[in-house]
Image 1 (cartoon, rainbow, N blue to C red):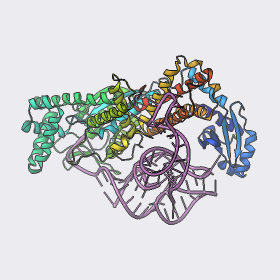
Image 2 (image 1 turned 90 degrees about the horizontal axis):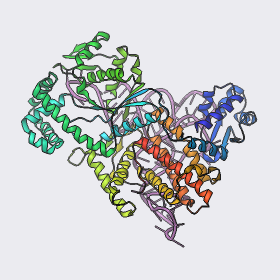
Image 3 (image 1 turned 30 degrees about the vertical axis):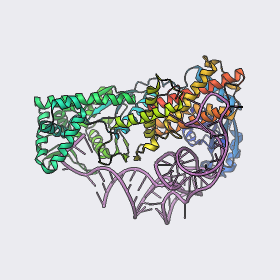
Image 4 (image 1 turned 180 degrees about the horizontal axis):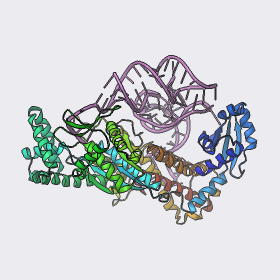
Length: 558
RNA sequence: GGUUCAGUAGCUCAGGGGAUAGAGCAACGGCCUUCUAAGCCGUGGGUCGUAGGUUCGAUUCCUACCUGAAUCACCA
């Protein structure tokens, strides 16, 4: 639709040279469907032309020249409305389809994006709240890949810091290798929880823990061996969750990667900007916000230091156009500080760093206050989905687990991404597994129904269908909707908000369902049938593409 | 207290200087001898937190206030 909008803008520009073409383009609105496909409000011109907006609209009506094969125009009040002629929609869609330009990613633009997402802490299972960073980051990666960027997908593990001192302390007191081999992360979690209980009455544990972390940083062999073991076990478990979600990374690395260069980084920082010792800690003072801590009083580093080192390293490796940090909104201040340090160090790429923040998932702790594990939630969704699939008796026995996984996980992913990023939201089983309405399975369902029709129609070559035969408003609607996909992608890229895509795919699925209900494809006369199969196929491909950007897979029956 | 974000239908949320403010859920009423009813069609439901200001026009921008959330030095 960008193509048609541009045509409108150019036509208006020829009649109204007072405005730039960009100004015109951005004032063009999408009105309610019955009013047209594009609308140009004339209020702003009233001041310049010293005439009533309504008079301007009537006047401009005659001045604007657009091919009548493409648009029908009319002035209504202060607006000029443009209605796309059906044949122009058909022509555009047909040519894009034939050239396979409809849903293929844009050509590579040679630019890089670095995305830091998921980033769980090792030695703890991935908790449900990690869903947000994981799923948002993955989807933004897909989105920018679709838009033509090369994307470095970085899982920046929390594998360094005082907590490992705590864990080692706990392991030496209450842990064992046998239990670790047997129970994996559960054992680590168990002793970590015990540590936090014990520290209430034995505060001296904390200094022991700090000492162990310091030893780890100093290269103590025993400490490093334990740390390595914890890390290895954790990664194996994380992998299971990522496989369920069908999420991949190009780089799995952690904060530990920078442990050896931190002294150098601190030196580099100190050379360029003012640092000072305050209450024993090394800090960077700011006037407009709280100071950034580089080193604790015991000399151990903090995560701001590691993030600064990581940002510099990533720029050196990827020469990125943007570097995204998909991290909860709680860490807003932290990233402001880190970005400001980079800026003051004189790196002119500091404005390419961007904190893609998101709100919390609430209502997720159990009665006992324990964490809910992401893997458990996914498996629960999958098994509940399986029950629903069995009721329908449409999916073959051999496929059922795979379909249940795709649909169950799809409902969770969609349920997260449909929320605006910065909103907190409540986790609610009933809502997330309600597959009716605005949900992932709803879109997957629309896709599956189309596949079923295509199968029954015995169509192999979609090029045979002639879209010119389609004149019903339901059919034209589908074509326009599909053509609007490019604008949705732009909007999502611009705002880094995925709910534009969830919204779009839901609306498209709804249009497909309405079509499906009103028009029988199989019983249509031959040429018409081919045309209808074609538009359904195109719509389904659009759904599939949109869902794949969200990180949701499609199924052929459900 | 400082900073940041949010307050829109019973609930969860879109939208955003312009035409009658939209979805989903929940409620209610229809629709399965016809390609998947995880669906379709319809009904009811709103002083867009409050008060000012800017504007031809404000739910949208500005200010103040109220309410809620996050954060503010050795965790990440």
